[in-house]
Image 1: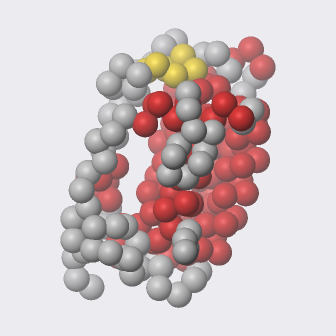
Image 2 (image 1 turned 60 degrees about the vertical axis):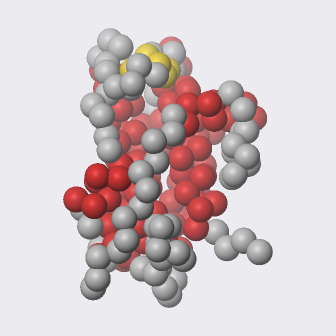
Length: 178
């Protein structure tokens, strides 16, 4: 398999999606209860299983846009990262999250050559782990804080919504549009 063209790194700070609707995917964090995130993540994971079983998932729609498989690998890793971050928030006082370079990970883990069936299973499992984490957050712990390496502060409630936007946005990215 040939090495895909590099993707331009996403350097945007997406934390604004907590305050206003995303003009691309339509996600509006202000209209969602953080207690509903676990169910929404589980539903989305089931959709990814079907997406990753479709023909052509390894083909990029354009050289500078990830394939459905590459997005699936990213979403799987997003679930893993957020499970780790929420775990830190539940067990430590004001943890600072280790930096994660999603673009570097895509290259290092060679997203484009991974097996779609394996990715589907791993994504589904990772989604259920993080969904169970959110579903079991004690009522008095939703306000526990954590900090990204750039200084952005989250509570478990806000990080759950931020996480959900990432998932919804990538589902939008791979959805056919007329």
